[in-house]
Image (cartoon, rainbow, N blue to C red; front, side, top):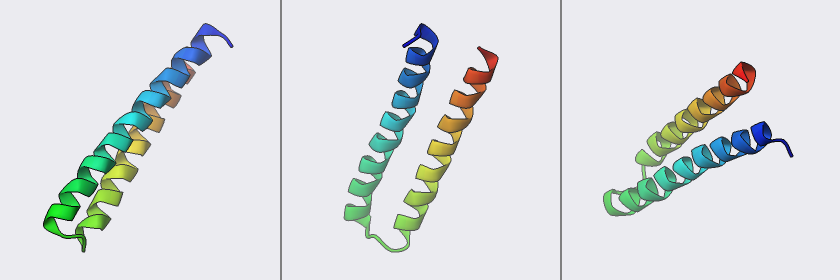
Length: 64
């Protein structure tokens, strides 16, 4: 595996870790506040985080 692909794998893993952490924290908040309709907001936030992470990782791939 080349050094560049290792770096890209680490960046993607970082974004997935951030998204997972936000999801778990959001889920804890939802248990405290109540699920409906806030679960939809949490899913929207997760989609945005994953999209931003994918955008930046692909942008970095094209630049290198």
